[in-house]
Length: 325
Image (cartoon, rainbow, N blue to C red):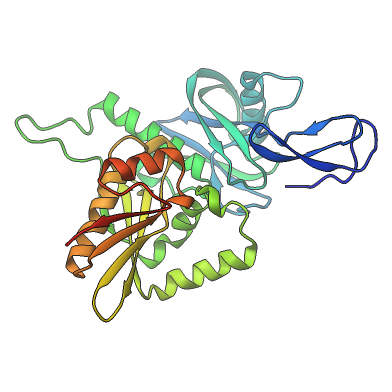
């Protein structure tokens, strides 16, 4: 996030003032307050030949990787106009909007905080080809969709697949048998590193970490000494990691304690039992290690997370604690 030096209204040197519960850049001369708000963007789920149109990015970030067509909304156009424009620029297709597919946000970037509006579209003309900052465009069938690099795109595709499965009956429940949970909990693997790093960026306390700190986190993930990581993975193809939890283990001569500092669930999968299932996996691991307590650093948790832990029996304090034995 860029820091301004001079006020854009009167040219006086900026100071700081607390406004709306946050310390913000403000002008002591004319009173102007510089608010840094998320930028609006559109993401496109273009349905074609039974699959989705993806583009291969020609520019950073994630140059050379497949993503949904997307782009920022211009100041003089509506979100719908931006969706149709971006579709033609990046895929060569003239499209019409079927419906609004969802709204998500990416406070973690890159490169800046934003809100992304997803639309379902269908082609009505044009020729499929890569254009603008896309080097290639092609249709991927549901079973061959790659794991997309942007978290919001992964969530949008996961929701599209879920809706498609409901409509086609591919995942109809078998009568008289309990419904299968739509995700599984498993220990993290080395290949999960990138998705876990993306989830870590969702935790507000991690938003301003320097690049060196992220490199150190990646190194600790590879070493994985003294802690266990569990991920929640949606039951779909391609697989999607929708949440994770880290249990750090500390032992003294007389007892062992577990510490949970990092836990995150993708926003569109919250309130679906994912967090409770992850915590259950961490508690089972704590039992296996004969730990006496589980502690949670409440200062890193938001209000909703603190209420979640409190409802499960953790004491309400700066460090929330649950006695196991």
